[in-house]
Length: 278
Image (cartoon, rainbow, N blue to C red; front, side, top):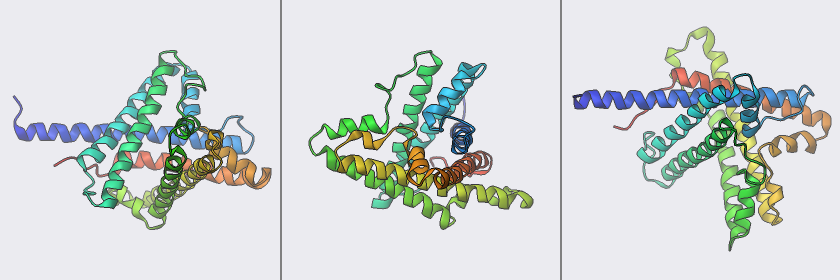
């Protein structure tokens, strides 16, 4: 029989390994999103890299179902870690309005990754989801707009989404993202490069969240679920709203930022101090 101390250590180790596996999977997905989107921006690829597109691409690789199966486990681990952060409040956010908002954000992220994992599981089993049944912003907007006061609810979600984007950008500009990494463990010669990946990564993610919120807001204003778009609509918006030349450059810069965000997740998997319930 294990003592209470040994049980506690085992639980902490399990949560830490779960978080690390999740961060690695998340890093892989964002790295591929960045690479594929960069290729699309400059004509090397015909597909821009949303999460669903990345999962489709992985499935089509040699030994794709096996690779996708491992990524699916990672996505589930990432979701589980976010649930632990939200429910058990390992980040010590407390019960203030801001603290509860942060904890709710962890839970929302967990459910989003459950949806991605579900899609990946279906792919791995050879049961691909068609566009009509796939859960996207468009289908969510369509469902909400059919409800009483659904336009206002969708508008509130849009504003909340844009607030997340602002927070991500602030997280980068204020240096808050550096709290994710124990910098004392980084080699001095690598620290600057590794930390910069986090800065540009959070900036890019913030821009994407702002664009997603903007499209949801348009959907609410015009009472049109199509405005909410799908997994890659934000990338198409950037590429075609500013003209082919400038749009491609801007999309390329965002793609590089998303690649940086993916790489920073790998750094976090190795060097983040992962908090566990007391």
